[in-house]
Length: 286
Image (cartoon, rainbow, N blue to C red; front, side, top):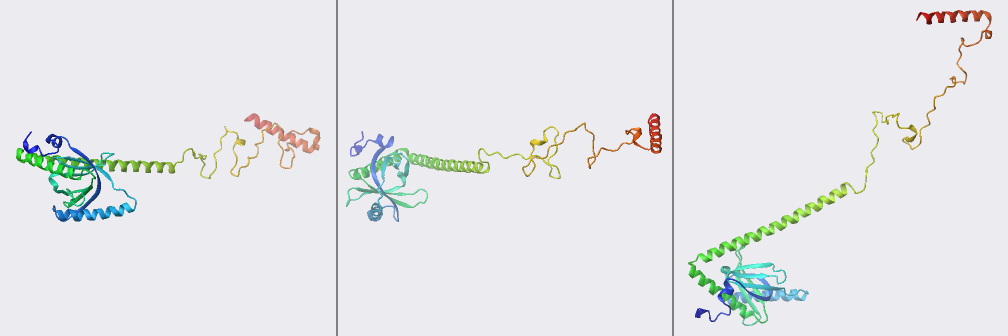
């Protein structure tokens, strides 16, 4: 091993091929005007400590995070879900220091890739504040040595990889948003269908009518089974009978030819006989 590596706390392979994890409390980040300086980070620490004190009085606890330090940067993750909250690339970190007045606090300043603003990240670690600061310093030293060995190509490669990783993260976010929108649309469509046609309801089919709004007569179906519009049954149809038809006064229709000969006077009877003979002759001619 190179003698210049003897003061390092970690091997070069641990920082270049892997990462060094640490647990800490995350006080937050705030914008600063300068990319470096002790007074700059001191003001940021005071500001974030005050904000954290107010949140603590409201019952909010300081969130715990996991730091993954390597020659590519510092990742801030949720310790349980391992979700990356912030990915601070090493070439964007311009300053790193621990607070000499408060041994629990350490900070670093990183230039945001989207807004190009300088943000100061502040952490609280009861035992490892100084060690974390030294580890970030060692990552800088090792990255600079690799830069000299590769003639600057290694830095460009890391920039391209970082850009691709950022694009992948953006696409994953867009994909999640699209999935949520599709799910919302499916739920709205399902609700609309339920309101439009309630389950189990069947609309009765009304019989077709003619232009006079009358139900057409069907000789096949019995008329007694079809109720009228007011709900009453129609009167029964009288059956045909072989009885003699009568007029409206109840009298049998008069047929002079069917009466007996003794029913009329002789003169009238002779006239009827002539008429009967004439009718028989006309029938015979036909």
